[in-house]
Amino acid sequence: MNSQTSEPITLDGEVSRRGLMLVLSSPSGAGKTTLSRLLLAEDPDLIMSVSVTTRPKRPGEQAGVDYEFVDRTTFDLMVNRRQLLEHAKVFDHYYGTPVDPVEAALAAGRDVLFDIDWQGAQQLKQAKDADLASIFILPPSTKELEQRLKSRAQDSDEVVARRMSEASGEISRWSDYDYIIVNHDVEDALEQVRAILTAERLKRARQTYLVNFVKRLQDGQ
Image (cartoon, rainbow, N blue to C red):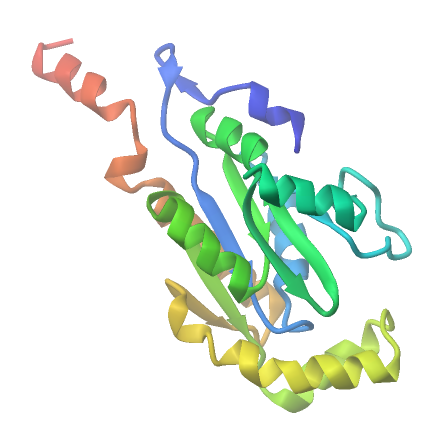
């Protein structure tokens, strides 16, 4: 995970707030990865959760940046040792979120972004519901979803067909999420995600400095 986790966000010498876990989920091709990259590029207080996976690297991906690529034996050991916050099998490969980097980021007041499917989101909710804000991204239509999958040219026709067949089941999980965005336009969708992130950061329970800050105000400081 990004080295920013070692630098707490402080106010008057104390960590100003507890970080949050922001989950973006969607059917493949609906836009969660694009939105994630745009958010990360503009927001220095937001860092990406780097998942471990057993799938092979795709062209352009970097180990330790996009994913930590591990074999199945290593992945199973991490599960058995309870080193993953969540894990799931997706399209014949396994994915999971390491616990320690996320805990360190939250304690330092950093927000952690998760680009994961509904199975992972459910497990995160069970493990750390108070720290979680979840967003589900819907495509404007199934026709548009298929076009986006084909235009990115990452997968074979067979894989595209399989992802489309899985899309209905993934979309059926929409009601499990806190927020829903229909991605007609990337810029509009990004603005909505920004608004959600701002509101979640301002929740009273996350602003850990407030108890001492309000006490000083009451004391006339």
